[in-house]
Structures are given as structure tokens and as C-alpha cells.
Image 1 (cartoon, rainbow over the protein chains, first blue to last red):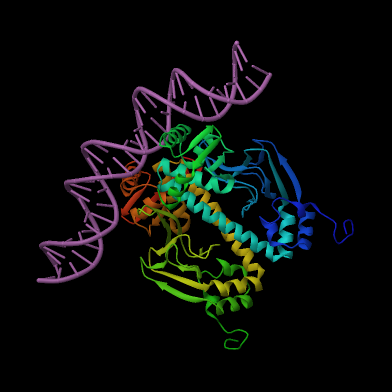
Image 2 (spheres, chains in turn green, yellow, red, brown):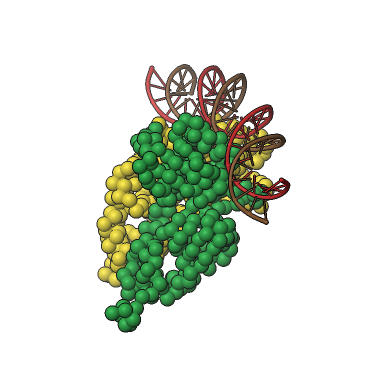
Length: 235
Length: 235
DNA sequence: CGGAGTGTTGACGTCCGTCAAGTGGGGTGG
DNA sequence: CCACCCCACTTGACGGACGTCAACACTCCG
């Protein structure tokens, strides 16, 4: 019966990412405790979560929206190390400062934990720490794929690789193939892929001319069904 | 008194990396249990620990020596994702297969755990899992630095970055500056830095001509004291 | 309608890759 | 102990992929 102590709803129970990120490791009773130390954070497009070098006071779940993680060289050169989407975790760091900046690419909502509180939860629920290790291992594997992109792939291979990866995260499948609503600018893509905006633009044009993709507008990319299959099996 | 049950030595107690890797998280009593599931593994130079795609049955501590981790594209292009030295941990993977190959660059000894056994230990000693998360976070931060190298730095910057990093891990400091005994070939360096052996060679030559390094022989690089300082402060 | 921002296209330059020919040091064997 | 070879490394000549700089196009605003 609703309203009784045993069945009262708390926010996490109805969360869009209840079965992802760190929450997936906990049952409802345990999640109630985690819920108590969580704070909702809302960000507009281009809003800053934290800067490289800030004290790493908080950790976050991504609930809705999209983020970019980036590092800067002193002269301004930028490398984007990852794009985050709902269900991703943010803020793992052994040092006491963040090793990268995190910015919203679109309107975004996060679930925030203070490091101190979360550490206590980890001690209480070892399952949580196990889940974090899984997430970290995943990130590590992704980073290694990214290293291969940057170190050894050509511009066109880089672009196709990330398009396929984005298709898995944010793609809509229909009878014609995949449609991707890009949350990021050409500059963001370039800084992720180790290229310039001009090269990204030229490469997309080349793909369009070859019939590999369609671009109804700047932020939308369609991959026809046949092409997608060919790509997954290796060109 | 030596020889009694309470004080009997077991191998881990005298291990060179007792205070590093995952063992640092445990006291002597706990370490005794970990010791029971560990197997020593010895490798010659160029020996293979495992291949990309193998079942990830084991995890390892690096005790002595040096390893390279690498991924291959179908056409043979190689990206080295990391170099490992004593105290590093090897084998973190969420999937049931390794995401990269691991090969010894020099004579190497490892401490091997089966995944199944180690998982049991993690349940028994949450401190161990916490330690693994720390190690994974560290690796993640390293991977992000590596992404910056590959995506945004020039050949000479790439080389200087890795030389400084190697100096920290395997460098000998004396009155003249740092001396690095490189465990890896030019090809390994190239595949780590996203370059070719020719470019690595030319870049080292250039550094030598500019007086930034000395190379008594192929595998030895010296960084004079003044140069090292200039590099750390940003050229 | 006009301006600003993002994306595209073009002309040209450059850094690094490719291909090929040395060079030198360590190991083997005579 | 020396001669030879092998392999890793170096060096040179050249080319190409991508970067740079600049002009232009499209769209979203007011």
C-alpha cells in the first residue's frame, strides 16, 4: 500500500538509470541509503561540471544528457578523452584533483555524491566498490580503443569508428538503418579524434559523396543499413 | 623465534614488491592467504604472457622485469597501450577475454592469480578490491595522458614526454642527471608514441644534436641535469 | 534583414610516413 | 682472435595525409 513506511517511494526508485551505473549493484533497501547522500544537479548546454585541476570533491552519475571530458595543454591544444551519456559514471580519480574537465554538451542532469560520503558507502556495501571496479575496467578498455584510434588509424577510420560507437550509445534504428543525433560540434569531434575541424568536415563530406552516410542537417548523421553491416564486418 | 608457526616466513614476505601492487593493501596475516593462491611465473625476453582475445583466466603482479601491452589491427598495425614495470598490476578486464596482448621486453618474473581464486579473495578482503580500484584509477589517468600524447603532441614532444616518464620509473639519478636504460626497441617506442621507427630515430638524433640527451649506446639515454629541469618546468 | 556562429571548401605548406640504402655493434664460428 | 654476418638502428630522398590560413555558405537568432 502506498504511503506506508515499507513501500514509500524515494527518488532513486524511479530513476531512468536505476539499473545502470553504480546503482545497479544495490537492492532497493540499500539504494535507499545511497539515495540519502545523493544530490540532483542540472546543467545547461556548455555548463561546466568541474575543471581539470579542481579539488575532486564530488563524483557523479549521468542521468540524462551528454558530457565531454577534456584535457588542455598550456598552449591551448585540447584533447577530449571521452563522451559520457546516461548511465555513465564520472569522477573516478585517485589524486585529490580532477585530471580532466567535464562539460555538458547538451542539457544534462547528474546525480552527485560527495567523495567522503561515497567512501563511507563503499565501506558499508562492498558490492558498490565491486561495481565501481567494473565501471573502471570498462573505461580502461574504452581508453585503449581510443589509443588505437589516435595512434594508428587514418582520418576516415577514426571517424567511422566513433560514428559506430555513437550509434550504439545514442543511435535510433529504423528500417533504413541508423540515425545519430550528434550532441557535439565538429570541433569536439576533432578534439576527440586528434584531427582539426576542417579535416573532420572534409572527411564527412567524403563519406557523404561515397554514399556511406547522409546528413539531413549538421547535427544528424544517417548510416544506411547495408553500410553499417559492411563496417561491422570490416569494410 | 624463526621456525615457529607464528613467525614462519612465506615467500610474499620477502617479495621485492611487497609494499606495492595489491599486496600493499594487506597485513602479513592476510597476505599469507593471498600467498596461498599465487604462482610464480618466469619469462624470457620476448616471452608472451597472453594474447589479445585469449580467455582472461589469470591476473598478475609484475615482480621484476618489464612488459609491453599492445593491440593489433587486422592489417598488422600495432598500438602499444602501456609499458609495465615492477609493482604494476596486469589483467584487469571486465570481459572474459583480454583486450590486449602482454609480452615481456626483458627477463621478467610475475606473480600469477587465477581470476576465480582472486575473486574469492576480493570478497573476503574488501581492502583488496579497494586497492584494485586505486590501481585502475591510476591506469585510467595514465591512459588519458597517453591520449593527449597521441592526439595533440608533436613527435619531439611525444618523445620527451615518454623519456621523462621512463626516467621516473627506471631512471638512475647521478651527479650529471638521469640515465635511462631503455628496455624497449625503437619499434616499441614508435608503436607506443604513434610514430614510425624512422621518426623516433630521427627525433632522438635531433635531441642529441641539440644537446638535450646523450646516447652512450642504443639502449641508454642520458638527460643532463639542466635539461631535465627545463623540461619539467615546460621547455 | 542582418549579424554571429558553426560548418564547408579551397589553396597551399609541413610534418611525418614510405622506401631504400647505409652503419655499427654484438654474436658466432672458424 | 679476427672475420663475417645479422639485426637493429640511422640516414637520405621523396611523397602524401593532414594542418593552416582564408574565404565562403548555411542556419539560427533577433
